[in-house]
Image (cartoon, rainbow, N blue to C red):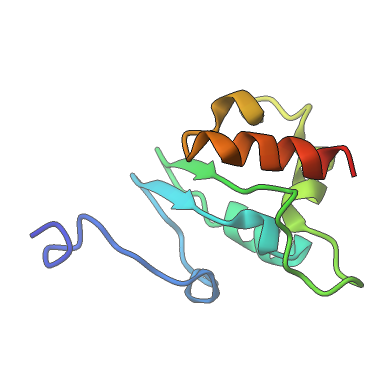
Length: 110
């Protein structure tokens, strides 16, 4: 399988330190819960011919109140860096139960 031959690997963010990911397509999910230093560490693992995709929902940050989301910091610092793009989805992109869209809208009006 792809897991057995190493084509696909699932690794915790903490195991990325010290690695260089060459010729890789890497997805970091739930990035809203990274700290700035964790996200910077992840981004600097990018090696030759690598592509990184980072996903997260800044309305669902679970960090302690005194910590800022690394995803939000990255957007602020990197939005004008050539080769980096941010794509934002909204209520219209929800593919769960249609009631979820109304719930998101209600919390947004809070």
